[in-house]
Length: 436
Ligand code: SF4
Image (cartoon, rainbow, N blue to C red; front, top):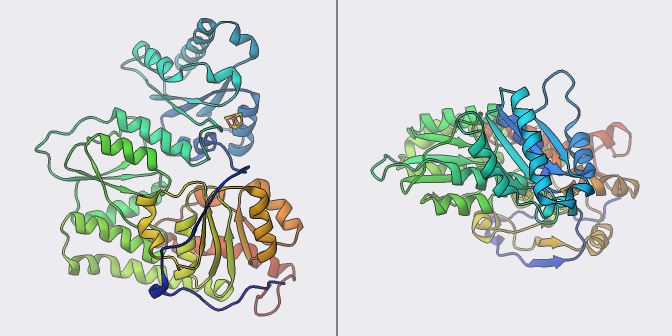
């Protein structure tokens, strides 16, 4: 039984700034290798080669599944202890693996070496190895590298590092080029198509998405480029794009009707789109989003949620729950809180919500046990133990895998939160109103 108040506490007048609890204890998150799961689906002629250990191979294989019917586009080059006998040998071994792979797979146009954290690997300079291999395979396959090491990254930071590496490869735009927009952050193809259509209807013509759907989709960048982040975890990539001369626009992220509208409006304002045109283009989508979310409000409104830190999407998801689903958020944990990028989100969250940055998992578990929220959003490692204690949980990784951005996906986003409650209801563990 929950002990939380059921009143809706969202109140625009009482929004931000929130108290931020900074914790630097033990944390329970996946490493950046996990990003490969959605990155390899997005860039369709890329191959992600993890340079790692058997542990890394097991993580990737169990998280991404085994592809039986298609040629895989990710793999692990397992570095054994014996490889440490000589780094020259290790580089030779890597070169041989890459040569074998590329001669067998002419469809690979971008080979991405992904660094990991085992001691067998960290002594290898993967960036230098990628440069060497890029020169060897020039004109046929681009070779690049980034780190997905669990020492340096949480699971969405793998994408952040990948996009930062891509940013360095983008061609320079001439100084007199017309203004252009880069939407940065992996989006499902269907979502990308929807945003492309909406931005075109707003009259914003020179629009690119990063990453694109193939290796050759590298937009030019320069002082007339504006960047709109589609994901909140791209601090390193945003800095890399700024170093190339672009301006990163500050906006809430496109989750739910409100977030999507604010995100599109930021682009519209940057490109001088008239207010009445914006209204005309977005009105129908906004109405559809509100209607779709309303289907799940009887289950969600008035309930409480608690976010463990995992994906860095937590503040945006919490804002959606509070302001569009009528929920009461107790704590919003995030591995990092990028002050600049998250400022528009924090301004929309109630001032009383506790934000926590980093993690000390034991003290956070104490807090969740004391508060017993209706839904706990957490990593996969914590989900089952908390379910065993009677809490209702949702894996945060599902928000990274599922298309949830934009007007047409707002209902799916609400449904992800309603699903575990509906499951409990089906099992007879909720009363008639649906209350826990
Ligand atoms: S990179 Fe490190 S944390 Fe990630 S699977 Fe490999 S050994 Fe584990």
